[in-house]
Each structure stands twice: as structure tokens, then as C-alpha cells.
Image (cartoon, rainbow, N blue to C red; front, top):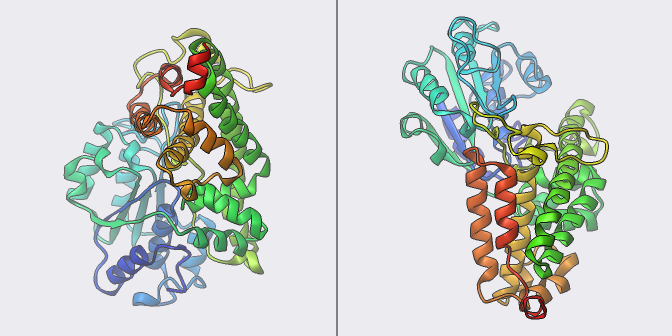
Length: 425
């Protein structure tokens, strides 16, 4: 398995190797939380299929022309598709002249003969971001795939795909990594010293892409800590104060999103370009959160306010939420910021729930252990778990075009209130 760069996913890597030993299906579905390495495993599979320097499970060799082109992102037979545009969606494209990055353009590209004379591979990142029309168009390609073609779909939530698409794919599941694996990854890349690696690995909750992004942008961790403390402070505040704080929360989350994304890309790509030394170790290829993380996903990753049919700024000043000097924020930026904020907010609610259940050892943000335990002690029984469920549901609503500011206001109002604060009000 030396040719694979995927870290901490032995079962998933073994499943892909089993395919290489016998027969790789024409469609493979990689399923798992955001930022756990789905895209890296897809790239490893693509490198194996396009490798010309080895055979069978010895692929990819990482030395031949095909492997090098995959590594540098310029292989003519490897097609990548990802969400884009204001709605951060994968669209079907125009009928007559489909634009690059659309399902129709991908279908045309895959119908052509391979340039290098071997296989054609398509990787669809965040495939759950295809709307139903785009999925139906992709289904036609899956039903009658061109010869020597493999389509790899990376999804955080397979339930968002049509059953007919899922049924035509070989499924490979990925999970979160052990904390030690994430620490080792940060160490191999030279991104963090041991104490920092341990802290980030714990905060990332087994999502290496999240840990890599924060390690590559130290200032982002400071902003994250500010957001966490603000959310904890709001447990003692009334409705009016919470709604006022919402705009600042979204603005700071926007700052965080902008600092994380370029840092994550640089951290993932730089070790491969250097190709030597300690940092040239395995890479996950996981994207920055939405955090979706889980995250984001990191994570993942967000759609437009209006679903393509309304005015994304119809709610007035809310549409202009921005950090200092950033100017007016687009619908996609606001949605991405809330997606990232929800990921952090879920972490806070999870830690509070652990404290309420009497399991402080499971708290991830150990730097705030005392504050979390004290806050949990003042909350109504089960309030943190209920809040976590609401936050998960809010993430689902955001995926189907709920207005970010409305979602945020509802969550702020329903965020639990400390009993002592309520009694003093």
C-alpha cells in the first residue's frame, strides 16, 4: 500500500486494493464525514488506474508519467468536478454549450477516447451538492458508462443522492481517524510541534483535514477560540443580546473561513511539491471544513440562499454581514461562514453534553474544560444534547437553502440558558 497517500483508513484502502486486484467498478461511492480523506482516496484510486509503471496492487508507482501528472493535477484523462458558483452546487449545464464544471460537460469529456491511451477517471467532489436535475443527468452516464471509464463520487451524506445513483455504485466507507493518527500526520508534515499537534488532533475530532487547516493557519485557531468563548458567554445572555451578537458571530466566522481555505490548500499541496524531507510523507487530501466538517466540513460544503430563484439579499442588512474591510458578503460567503460556525457550535454543544453526562474526559476542548463543566452544571438536564440535535438539523436545513440569518437567529434564541442567569433576569 506504499503508493497510497491516504492516512488512517486501512479498511477503505484495503477495499480499493481489492478492486485493483480483480475489477474496478465503473462507479465508486466514497462515503464518510467531511475532511476525513475521501478526496485523497479518490485521487489514489485515480493514480492507480492511470499508472503506467506498475500493474495490479503495485499501482500507483508514483514515479511514471501518469502518476506524476496525477500528482501535479494535469493528467488529461483525470476529470475533476466540484461545487461552484453562488449556490456552491454542481449543475447540469446548458444543453447546447455546457460550461466546464457541469455534468453535461463531464459526460461529453468522458465520451472521448483517452488521451494517454488507457483509462478515463472522473472525481466528483461533494457529490451531494448535485441538485436532482444534475443527478438525473449523471444517472444516464452511470447506466451506460463509456468503456474504460471510472467515476468516483465523494459524499458526506449518501442519503442526499438518488437511490438509483447509489444502487449503481460500489460503496466504500471512511470514518474518522484516531487522535494519534492525526497527530502523526501533522508531525510528518512538520505543521505542528507535539503539544500543538495533540491539541489540534483532539479539537478536530478525527478529521485530519480540519487539523491540517488549523495547523497551517495559526491565527485561525485564535478566531475559533473567540467564537467558542462567545457561544459560552451567550448561555448567560438574554434574547436581545443574543440577536445582536449574531451579526458579529457570522462576521467572525467569515474571517475564519477566509483564513482557513488557502492555508489548507497550501498545507496539502506544499509537501507534494517539495517531494523531499519529512514533509513529503503521506497526505490526506482532505479539504478544509464545513466543517463539515463533518467538516467542511469542513465541513462541508454550502448552497445559495435562494435556490437559484430568489434574491439572496432580500433580508436586507443581514445580506451585508462582513468582517472589517471585507466589503459586502455574497450569499455563498454568508452560507459558508454559517456552515463553519455550525461546525464549531456543534463541537461546543457536544462538549457541554459530555460534561452534563459526567464524562469530562471526553471533552475535546480541554483548554476550556473548567468553563465547560461550570456552564454545563447550570444548564437544564439534557439541554446540551437537545441543542446538539437542533444544530445537526440546522446543518441539514442549510443544505436545502434555508436563509442563513434566519437559521442563526432561531439557533441563538433556542440556545440553552444557564439557570443562574435566568433566575437573575
